[in-house]
Image (tube, rainbow, N blue to C red; front, side, top):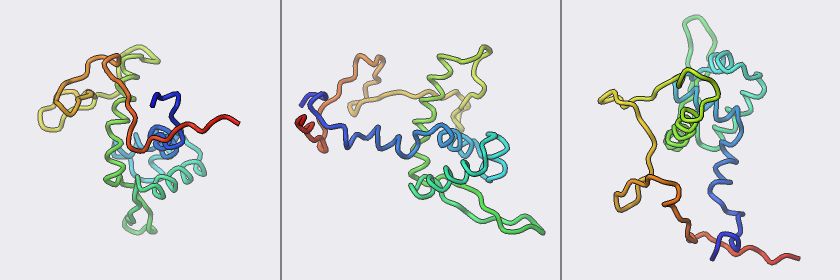
Amino acid sequence: MDWREQSPENCSIAHTLEVIGERWTILVLREVFNGVRRFDEIQRHLGVPRPILSDRLRRLIDDGVLTRREYREPGQRVRHEYRLTEKGLELQTVLLALMEWGDRHPASPGGPARVIRHRDCGEPLHVELVCAGGHVVTSPRDVVGDRGPGARPLPASA
């Protein structure tokens, strides 16, 4: 079945965008990946309006990407911090791919604002496509899409 004949209703990209496809959501995830986990710190660092941040955090919790944990500073009321779940940690590659693309096509001069390194050896990381046979894919032109097990035909036009 050719892609043009396949229904996009159960597309994995569309599903992922339902969870993380909004600008503030991606930026909230960036903050949490970089260790900014408390509401006030996220809000201050991003400059996002508080109601929008509350909504994005709630959605990420509802979708199982973040979890909320209580903490209390001495003499203060109970507050919450936000931690990535295993499902959330799996988004690291997505964020790194977006970052790497932005590093190659910068919006401003001067190079990347942040370099992500391998904790063990200190070398910079980059995202790679590797097939199940172990081959590194070096060009987007070397990638083909095939019908998956969840493919459905495109409904006939009325």
